[in-house]
Image (cartoon, rainbow, N blue to C red; front, side):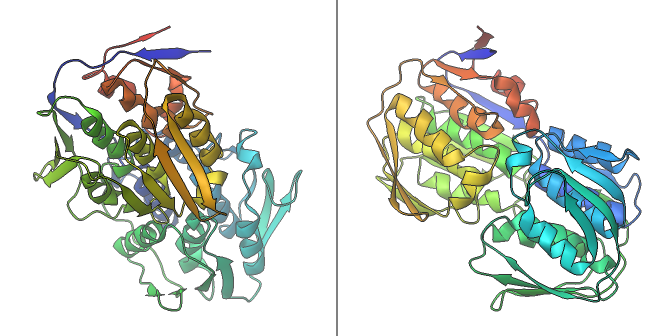
Length: 410
C-alpha cells in the first residue's frame, strides 16, 4: 500500500495556487458540445481523470465504454449514447457497478431507449441497444437521489422529437448543479423553462450551437485550501486562489460563506479569491443538500477546531465513491471526532475532543477523503493512504500542497 507522510507545517505562508478547472463544468460542456457537433471550441478543460475519461469515450468507436470510477461520466454518457442511438456496453470498476442507475435507465426507457442490464437489475453494466422514440415527452424523476440523473436527461432533451417536460418529485437535492446544467445549455443556444415552484423543467426541440467556451476553476478543489488557511496556526497565513469567478455557476462556491464561520475570510481580487484568517464561530449548523461534496472538508475542519457541527442534507454521500458517511465516522474518530446520526437519514451531529497523534487516514478509493484530511498537516503529522486517488478530480493536488507542506512516501 502506498502511503504519504505529511509533516507538520511550522512556517507561515503567503502564496498563490493555480487551481484546476471545474470537473463539473467540463463534463457538462463536453456532452453539450458533442451534441452541438463542436470540435476545438472548448478551453481550460479539467485535468481530472473523470474529464479525461469523458473525452476519451466521446472520441472512441469502441463497443465497450469503461468509465472506470467516474459516476458523472457514467450517467451523462448513458443518456448521450442512448438518445443518439449508439450501441454501447457501459461499465466501470466494481464500485462503479455497485452504484445505482435504475432511475436514469427507467426514464430513458420511457423516452424510447432500448437498455438492458447485463448482471444486476438497476446497476451497471448496461447494454445500450438503440433508440426509438416512444411518443412520450413528459416523465417524472425523483430529485432526492442524484441531480446527475436530471442533468443527464436535460442535456439530451433538445434532441428529442417532442422535447421534454421533466417533473421532479420529492425533495430536490444539489439544485445548483442543475442550474449549472441549464446555464451551460443556454450558453450553447438552447432555451429552457424552469419552474422551481412546481419543480417542472421544460425543453422544446432545439439545436445546440457550438461556441467558444472557457471552463472556470474548480470550487470543490478550492475548498481544501480554505481548510489549509482555517487550520494554520500562523495568524498571517494567506493564500490567493486563481481562476475563480466572483459570480460562479458552481454550487460549491458557497464554501466562502461556510468557511467564514470556521475562521476564513475570502475577498475577490479580480484574479480569484484571497484567503486570510479570522476568528471562528463557536458552533455551526449547515444544510449540505446543495453542496454535498463540501461535507467531508467541513467535518475535518470542525473536528480539528473543536467546533460543534450539525449537518443535514448529506444523504447522497452514502452512494458516492464510497459510503462517505461511514468513511467519515471511521476516520474522524482517529483524532477525536464523533459523527452521530440524531435523526434517521436527516440530521447528524459532529462533536470533538481533538487530539492528533500522526493518524493514518484510509481513503476508501475516494479522492475527497484524501484531500479533505490532508490539511491536518497544518496542525501535526498525518499519513494518507493511497494518495494517488486524487487523480479523479485534482491530479496536481500533492504538487500544489507541496508548496506549503513537506511530504514523503513511506
